[in-house]
Image (tube, rainbow, N blue to C red; front, top):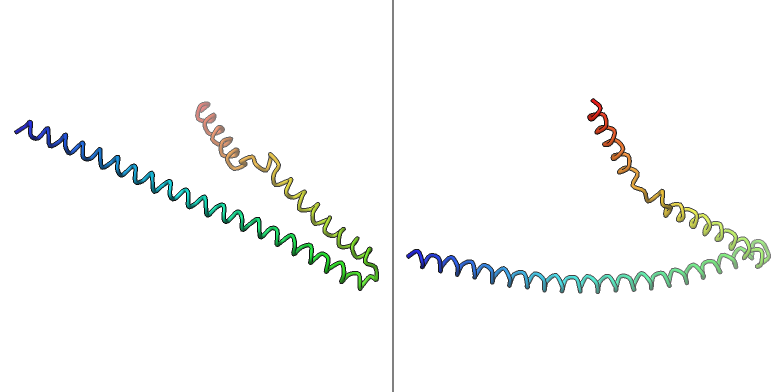
Length: 131
Protein backbone atom coordinates (compact mmCIF):
# COMPACT_ATOMS: atom_id res chain seq x y z
CA UNK A 1 0.00 0.00 0.00
CA UNK A 2 2.92 2.32 0.69
CA UNK A 3 4.24 1.81 -2.84
CA UNK A 4 0.85 2.88 -4.10
CA UNK A 5 1.05 6.09 -2.02
CA UNK A 6 4.51 6.87 -3.45
CA UNK A 7 3.18 6.48 -6.98
CA UNK A 8 0.22 8.70 -6.11
CA UNK A 9 2.50 11.36 -4.59
CA UNK A 10 4.84 11.18 -7.59
CA UNK A 11 1.84 11.45 -9.89
CA UNK A 12 0.53 14.44 -7.99
CA UNK A 13 3.93 16.14 -8.03
CA UNK A 14 4.29 15.42 -11.75
CA UNK A 15 0.79 16.78 -12.40
CA UNK A 16 1.55 19.90 -10.33
CA UNK A 17 4.78 20.48 -12.28
CA UNK A 18 2.98 20.09 -15.63
CA UNK A 19 0.23 22.46 -14.55
CA UNK A 20 2.80 24.95 -13.23
CA UNK A 21 4.65 24.83 -16.54
CA UNK A 22 1.41 25.29 -18.50
CA UNK A 23 0.43 28.17 -16.24
CA UNK A 24 3.85 29.80 -16.63
CA UNK A 25 3.64 29.48 -20.42
CA UNK A 26 0.14 30.98 -20.45
CA UNK A 27 1.27 33.83 -18.17
CA UNK A 28 4.27 34.52 -20.43
CA UNK A 29 2.02 34.53 -23.51
CA UNK A 30 -0.33 36.95 -21.77
CA UNK A 31 2.65 39.10 -20.76
CA UNK A 32 3.96 39.21 -24.35
CA UNK A 33 0.53 40.07 -25.72
CA UNK A 34 0.02 42.81 -23.15
CA UNK A 35 3.48 44.30 -23.76
CA UNK A 36 2.85 44.29 -27.53
CA UNK A 37 -0.48 46.07 -27.05
CA UNK A 38 1.08 48.58 -24.63
CA UNK A 39 3.91 49.33 -27.08
CA UNK A 40 1.41 49.79 -29.90
CA UNK A 41 -0.59 52.20 -27.71
CA UNK A 42 2.63 54.03 -26.76
CA UNK A 43 3.64 54.49 -30.41
CA UNK A 44 0.15 55.69 -31.36
CA UNK A 45 0.29 58.18 -28.47
CA UNK A 46 3.75 59.34 -29.54
CA UNK A 47 2.55 59.83 -33.14
CA UNK A 48 -0.43 61.86 -31.89
CA UNK A 49 1.85 64.05 -29.74
CA UNK A 50 4.09 64.70 -32.76
CA UNK A 51 1.04 65.57 -34.87
CA UNK A 52 -0.20 67.89 -32.11
CA UNK A 53 3.21 69.58 -32.00
CA UNK A 54 3.11 70.17 -35.76
CA UNK A 55 -0.34 71.74 -35.50
CA UNK A 56 0.76 73.79 -32.48
CA UNK A 57 3.76 75.17 -34.41
CA UNK A 58 1.53 76.08 -37.33
CA UNK A 59 -0.94 77.78 -34.97
CA UNK A 60 1.81 79.76 -33.24
CA UNK A 61 3.13 80.90 -36.62
CA UNK A 62 -0.32 82.05 -37.75
CA UNK A 63 -1.03 83.77 -34.45
CA UNK A 64 2.36 85.49 -34.56
CA UNK A 65 1.73 86.68 -38.10
CA UNK A 66 -1.73 87.94 -37.09
CA UNK A 67 -0.26 89.76 -34.09
CA UNK A 68 2.33 91.43 -36.30
CA UNK A 69 -0.33 92.53 -38.80
CA UNK A 70 -2.60 93.86 -36.03
CA UNK A 71 0.26 95.70 -34.33
CA UNK A 72 1.31 97.15 -37.71
CA UNK A 73 -2.05 98.94 -37.92
CA UNK A 74 -1.38 100.54 -34.53
CA UNK A 75 2.28 101.56 -35.00
CA UNK A 76 1.88 102.22 -38.76
CA UNK A 77 4.93 100.10 -39.59
CA UNK A 78 5.00 96.40 -40.36
CA UNK A 79 8.75 96.24 -39.77
CA UNK A 80 8.42 97.84 -36.32
CA UNK A 81 5.52 95.53 -35.46
CA UNK A 82 7.58 92.49 -36.51
CA UNK A 83 10.50 93.74 -34.42
CA UNK A 84 8.29 94.23 -31.34
CA UNK A 85 6.62 90.82 -31.65
CA UNK A 86 9.90 89.06 -32.48
CA UNK A 87 11.63 90.72 -29.53
CA UNK A 88 8.85 89.67 -27.17
CA UNK A 89 8.96 86.07 -28.41
CA UNK A 90 12.77 86.08 -28.14
CA UNK A 91 12.52 87.19 -24.49
CA UNK A 92 10.02 84.42 -23.78
CA UNK A 93 12.30 81.86 -25.49
CA UNK A 94 15.34 83.05 -23.53
CA UNK A 95 13.42 82.91 -20.25
CA UNK A 96 12.11 79.42 -20.94
CA UNK A 97 15.57 78.24 -22.05
CA UNK A 98 17.28 79.59 -18.93
CA UNK A 99 14.63 78.07 -16.67
CA UNK A 100 14.91 74.74 -18.48
CA UNK A 101 18.70 74.77 -18.22
CA UNK A 102 18.44 75.48 -14.50
CA UNK A 103 15.90 72.67 -14.05
CA UNK A 104 18.24 70.24 -15.81
CA UNK A 105 21.40 71.24 -13.96
CA UNK A 106 23.23 68.50 -12.09
CA UNK A 107 22.64 70.16 -8.73
CA UNK A 108 18.90 70.14 -9.39
CA UNK A 109 19.10 66.40 -10.03
CA UNK A 110 20.85 65.67 -6.75
CA UNK A 111 18.42 64.01 -4.34
CA UNK A 112 18.55 66.70 -1.62
CA UNK A 113 16.18 65.01 0.85
CA UNK A 114 18.04 61.71 0.57
CA UNK A 115 21.37 63.48 1.11
CA UNK A 116 20.02 65.24 4.23
CA UNK A 117 18.59 61.97 5.52
CA UNK A 118 21.88 60.14 4.97
CA UNK A 119 23.78 62.94 6.71
CA UNK A 120 21.36 62.76 9.66
CA UNK A 121 21.72 58.97 9.82
CA UNK A 122 25.51 59.28 9.80
CA UNK A 123 25.35 61.83 12.63
CA UNK A 124 23.07 59.59 14.69
CA UNK A 125 25.30 56.57 14.12
CA UNK A 126 28.46 58.53 15.01
CA UNK A 127 26.79 59.81 18.20
CA UNK A 128 25.86 56.25 19.19
CA UNK A 129 29.39 55.06 18.50
CA UNK A 130 30.90 57.90 20.55
CA UNK A 131 28.36 57.58 23.36
